[in-house]
Amino acid sequence: MALSPVVLGLLALGGCQHNPLLVQRSSCPAVAVPNFTGDTTLFRGDGTAASDIDLVATVTNVRGACVDAGDRVGTNVTFDILARRVSTVGARTVTLPFFASVVQGGNLLVSKQVGAVTISFADGAARAQASATAHADVDRAATTMSEAMQKKVNRVRKPGDLDAATDPMADPEVKAAVRATTFEVLVGFQLSDEALAYNASK
Image 1 (cartoon, rainbow, N blue to C red):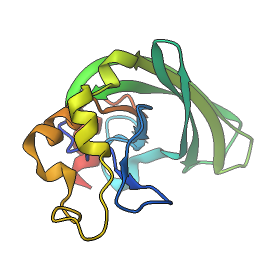
Image 2 (cartoon, rainbow, N blue to C red; image 1 turned 180 degrees about the horizontal axis):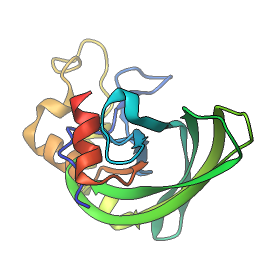
Image 3 (cartoon, one colour; image 1 turned 30 degrees about the vertical axis):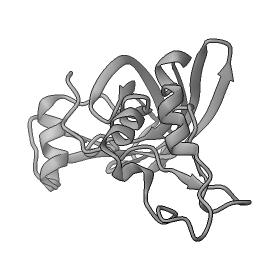
C-alpha cells in the first residue's frame, strides 16, 4: 500500500551547548509516525458507524536508537500498541500488521518492511498492550553532505558577525543538501485504503 501524502519536517538542527551559534546535525535516521497511520479501528461485520466499532488500537511510546557503525547508519525502533475492545467476553487474540519505512528528504520512499504484532486480551479485560520492534538502515554515504556544504552548516558563528543570526537553512543550496541527506524511519499500522480514509475523516 502506498503511503499517504505526508508533510514531514526536515531533521531539526540543534544548537551546541558550548557555542549556541554552531549548528550540528546527525546522520542517524529520526523516527516518526506518519499522519493517519498511528491508530487502527476494527468494526463488526460490514459496519463503519461508531456503534459498529469492535476494537481500537494505537501506536505509542515510539523510540529510536541509533546504530552508527561501518558503512551503514541505522535505527532500532521500539514501540507499544495499546488496544481497547468493546466486548470483554472471553479471551481473544488479535494480530495487527504494521510497516517500517525509510523515507529520504521527507517524501521519497527508499524501503518498506511489513510486520505484525499480536495482542492478547484476557477474559473480561477491555484493554491489552503489546510491544514491537523494527530496524532500518541506510548507506552512510547517502547521509553525508559534501565538504563544502558541511562547512556552510558547521561554520562557527560568533556574536557580532554580520551573518551570526542568519539561519544556514535560508541558503537554498544548504536547504537542498540537508533535505537530500536527511532520512527518517516511519512506523505505523499497515492500513487498507478504506481504513486510511476513515482515519483521515475523523
